[in-house]
Image 1 (spheres, one colour):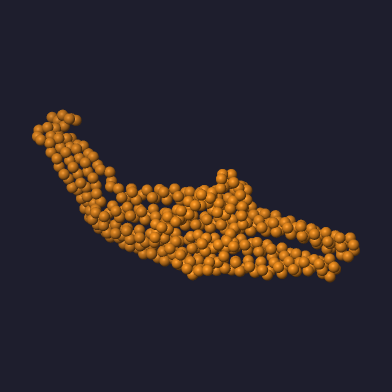
Image 2 (image 1 turned 120 degrees about the horizontal axis):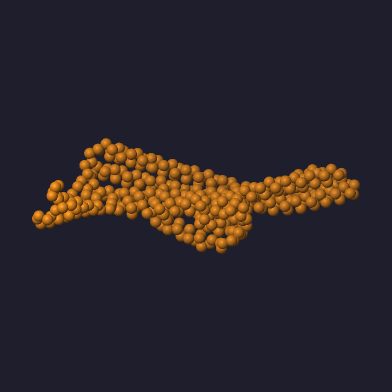
Length: 419
């Protein structure tokens, strides 16, 4: 099952890479932005290199140490013919860990490499989630800017009405001055919104490992999320796919192997050797040697077993904590996504239509001299706020959908579809 999940992850990354836009392209879809981040993000590139390095450790841990070759010569102290001695010895020795130690060390190194892979998976999910959040926020902020600029034209129309009515003697100059002041305040608000846009654009550039001042054009509106119909099943999905849980399980298995290895450290390692002796005075000789450690200091081995056992308990508790954290994150993200969706629906179906009707009624009444200018101005501000809140709610929906995917630990494209 784990191999299948890893294969699916690799396939997903491959498909993402296939959608990377050509160099120099500044107009990005959401999928392209995610692909660029997965490929270019500096932190991910660093972790990928470390993961590849860790993958080389099992073969090193499972290899025997290099054999040792030694040469020695022996002759009479006073009448010897150095260096051409009467006796020459050539020995080759190979050290062998006790049976099972080598394979355990290789398995432990393999678990460490797999844990590093889970760490990379978790960071990849984190970066993807942040890209989706910032893309949604940036799109929403640009919608707010567009709404604000459109509202500027509405205020100019109101200003023209007040000036016309003032010229006809039907309204006081105060109405025109108030309309001009409101227009100035709207310009100042636009500057603040543009500052927030710049911050979000810089954050997205940072995630994509681009220059902070690079211009980013968003090629499409982010897919509009819907709440999965089977939220409860997401808890089970998260336990099977979330990298933090999988990594914690690997650590449980790793320290179980470590405990087995420590129990074998009581058993001595040994060396096998073959020695060839070349003698001038007699026939050459061949000798076989066996050397063994004497595991005399048993307390350190017992301490190693206890340490591994405690680390195994620690890892098991860490896994339980990861499962609980995962459940909390799924519950929290799904509830917030549901709230964001309901809020957006409320703005679209009730608040904005009501605000538009109120503004049109006040504008008509003001032209006819039946409505006070403050009522007209308040209705215009209310409509602007309603449209702004709806745009920001769209961004919040995208952000919470991305957080739900991060909480589950996998893409929910089969569950969260575009409308």
